[in-house]
Image (cartoon, rainbow, N blue to C red):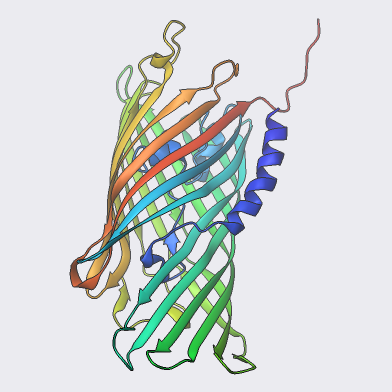
Length: 411
């Protein structure tokens, strides 16, 4: 059954991932867009804390986790996002439904493997400066769409029962299209500039997870993950047209090597397996080189990314036969992110809180579950002429577990 679900979902989501607009943030104008993948719903509901060697949930961020799987896992997730965009004197609302990830994890003794598709970044902005009330003034419309996806394949290996390592190979690809329309009040003709960039590149990710008993029931959990800096090739074309001109002017294709920065993520926590956990995660990312010729601006600089998160879960009684609600996993987390963008001398930050639950699927006969979560917070600021985003996200994922490659036995 799970195999049929995987094939159907792969075909559907592969199409959706290219067609969707994954964000409505004006900050997606910069670089290659807004960072989309922030972990599977289970860990996003804990602020992004993913430190336990889980045997039934897939941790895509740390490839060493694959070695801890006991059953084949198929997981798919998506988000409904509602955002209020506020300036100092106005506000607008935007809503999006997006695909977040699809992945399969397969246990192989001391080894574990995983592969999947993840949207890495999204561009989706509409910015308008309207000066039509003033004769001879310039009005501008900026639109952007697209983004970068990644396909990954990884292996994990269990060195010891409490220590595993792993590595991912990732192929990044996508297309970003931006349109700029400029007109002058009182003049009929408008100038339109369309920039299209095809992006592609390869990068690597390595990780390690370790745990040990510190009391009879309580364990220490640690996680370390490192993503290597890599190149992202951008092949761009520019077309400029003016209303009334029969032929647009197309510039020759231009190649640019963008740079995805290195990133290190460390986490630690304490807890009782299948009962409770409290932990923290810190992530730091170097300065990249992600600005293309069409989105380089004098009032924008890039700084180092940083994330600080705390979160955990609680399960009243995972093996309860009498109370269904006692088997539910309850999750919560807090996060603070410096997004690495400085606009008008203001750092753009993201502060948020998350809550969630892992709900066992009745009658599945396995550890399959539905994961729901909510996130709410704010990104950006209204000072210095900028935009503040107050967001509410409803997250939903399905995690199906099954045994593969097991020979049937007959008496």
